[in-house]
Image 1 (tube, rainbow, N blue to C red):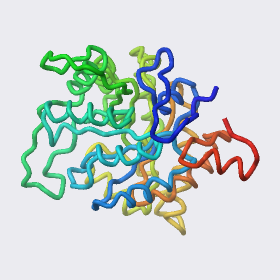
Image 2 (image 1 turned 45 degrees about the vertical axis):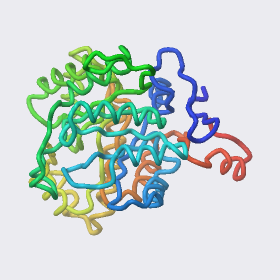
Image 3 (image 1 turned 60 degrees about the vertical axis):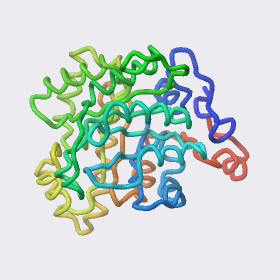
Image 4 (image 1 turned 90 degrees about the vertical axis):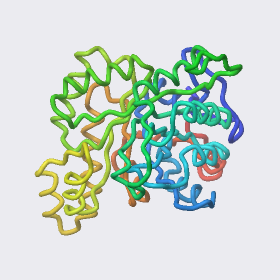
Length: 341
């Protein structure tokens, strides 16, 4: 199955039966292969070259690239703009939409605008509070939360209407996603929360960092018991720790992060802590892939984006598959004489 084919960069693929978007990311998920996504930190710049430079480190290793939307309530280039730039050259971006900074009028406009530029994937988030970021004096909006945003986005796509009821002439053809945190006990309540998001419209899910595999297995068991495994594609969040000190800071200062003492001790006891952090990430990915219901991993390597290729390569999760990137097919033909499907 040639689910990765790209006729011309920036031009949409045909929508396959049972799909809601023309995107390659949805094709990968529905083909049943283990998917890989990664997070691109938007630059503090108006230079498009900086976006392309950051995206190129993922070439050949990820199926889609998340463009964060003011992550941590810090100001950067907008997610919509990053996605427009990435789509222009053929990447498969996931546009993160936070409810923190815009009301439902602006958000619906962004979803339509993104879809018009070829953005096929939207991740609906409530967003961090403004007090966590670099503009604590900003006024938070939170007109919606992630669940209500999913419902509105689904209405745009399926009912061809704004939330107001006014008709739109061409619906956004998008795959809708949500975030979830398996680290918060009781995990059964998180499964119930996830069910509400799926009912609202979530088709794929990307989780918070998961460093506690036994806890993650409990969460996935609860998700299975709730009958959700067949209703959404779940990608587990993973990422390397640069140092034990960085891990300790994360679990103390970042809401929703859970890192077991055993993980901190493993990194702390290593001669090269950064190298051991990469080894840990590889081990986590290989364990995650064995859990029933997991469709892929979402790699968040903040300020270590260049390490994603090594981690994915060493984990073996692509099984020889080469995700599409600009110039992939020409490069493969020149190097091997063959296209890799």
